[in-house]
Length: 302
Length: 144
Image (cartoon, rainbow over all chains, first blue to last red; front, side, top):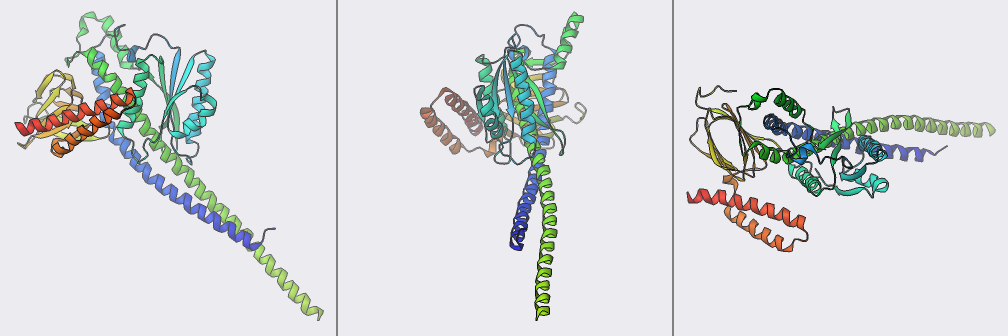
């Protein structure tokens, strides 16, 4: 049985752990609020962008001359998986969920005989997958949102890199894996295809164009420069926006996951302190009883 | 949504990826389109245009002042009642400082000389074009 001093030391150490986890929880909560506000603030641009894409798409007929970002390279042999994780740990199952999803995806693609390349955004994903898929990793980015704020420039940097690789013909299909911020309690790992870009409205517009040939100029919009050129400029921009949104979602999700994890840790530490206190009190009581017995039996012997 | 030409204004919005910068009724907006500057008044025909780096001039409702905002390229979505500018980066021209910009250009030129690979050079070149456009937006005003 441990001595009283050992009990006391353990209680002190668990108490200080609890202080740390509860402080981390508070910090995560305030960061989460900021991240959510930022995600909110980026909404108008994304909405306006989608509106504009829809308008342009309604006037463009997809053909072989369309931008490759939209129609793809005509092959799906080489896949690029872009994985978004956090830079820091201690956030519960946040990173492992998206990593598990990514591993499955990569194995599936490999089993289908595809070539898979990996691009990691965030230090955790890079460190963990380095051992397993080190030869597939083409690059990694980290330090995004390090100053408590995800900048659009960060997203742009990632998308510029992806675009460079794409125009160099390094891959055919690009998928983004990240944690979607469903709620404070739940972050869902999801896979989103970035290249070729999926635009549901586009296909609808196409069918319409085929069925009613004369209704070709449906929208009263004029374009400057012409719609194909605008589309060519909108698509890379849209890629940045999609990545930016994923980074924001991931940043908010990370803080939410950390908050939940730290809340649990704080509660567990509290339980542990209670349990240790009970044990400590029992041990102390036993010690006192033992001393009393010793004194009484000593007195009786005289 | 305000009605067309009821009071001679339309809804103007300036948004960057990070936040909404301006929003409200405007009397007139001049946008540096890729194929030339164009002015937007209430009832402008529907137009989608891409924007080159340059200065957007905005006259809001109930004011005669022209707000000059530099944007680093983007897109404009114009309809008779609305005008939305999607800007990649936006700075008020009043916040720009000629000496600072010139210094930045000098620094970038130096960086260019020291750049190691093509990617870095391309990045610096982008910044350089932007800063030059900013300077032009600023001095263009000063001359006029």
